Every structure is written in structure tokens, then in C-alpha cells.
Length: 187
Image (cartoon, rainbow, N blue to C red):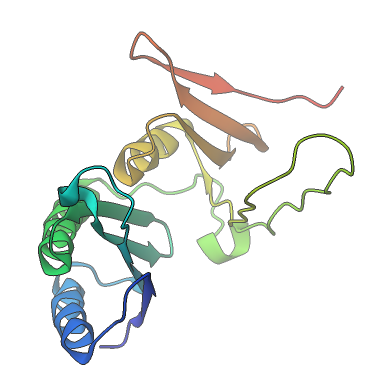
């Protein structure tokens, strides 16, 4: 398998059986999707989960040049959770492949259009920042951002670089089920 596979475990040991099982299943994704760069499999055991069926968690993240796909499933058994997450991932891959390929409109490639992560300065007073995330913004239009939001399963919001306005925008779902777009302006 030419794809970079990373298996991370939290509160559990990754046995050879688990590693072999995950590697075998993930290698089948090569048949469905060709431009896959990296696969991250995150396996977690949560002892404090209220429901016993939610204790074993399998999360799969696929990274390609123009997309990020993520699924998460929970079960009483880690293999069952992983299989359910793989089934969900295959449906997402099929949905992704079913989309028409659309160009950027300005002729730039993804590697040229990728911007550097935005750094946030930490403030000394006020609430404590518990978690920081950085990610690469891939330029896309509003329609592509909406599709990515649905594919990733982000229900509340999605941040993207809008190629039409050359600015960072936030796409969010409103209470009535429609979507809103925040276009920040520097004043």
C-alpha cells in the first residue's frame, strides 16, 4: 500500500491483530480512490461512556489533494466499530467520486493555491484556550464548501477560503435548516 497509514490508540493497546485487520481493510480503499495521500485511524476506549455500546470508538480520516473525509462510529467491540466506520467511509468515497470535477476557474493548481495556516496569538487575560487546531485552507467556491461540509459531517460550521471573494468565509447551518455565509471584512 503506497498510502501513508497511521494508527493511533487512546486508552488501549494496538495489538498485531488489530494492526493487520486495519491495514487489510484500509488497503482496499486504493481500489476506490486513486489520489489518496494519507489515512489516519484513531481507535479509542472510553471507560466513562454512559452507554456500554459507546465505549469503543473508531475514527477514520482520509486526506487527499482536494478533500478530507472523516467518519466515526461507536460500538461495544473495536472491530465492529471499525467495520461500521469503514462502511460509512465507503459511502462517502462513492459520494465524492459521483461529484463532477470542477475547476477552480483561475487555473491555479491545489498545491499553488494552498495557503499557510493562520497563527493565533495567545492572550494573557481571559478564558483559557483548551485546544488549538491548525489546518490548510484549500481555495474553493461556496458550492464546493457546502459539499465538503456535508461530506465531513460538520453540522454547525465550515471554514474555507473563497476563490470568488479572495477571503476566508464561514459557512454555517441555521436553525431553520438553511445555510448562512459569514464574509468577514477588516475595518
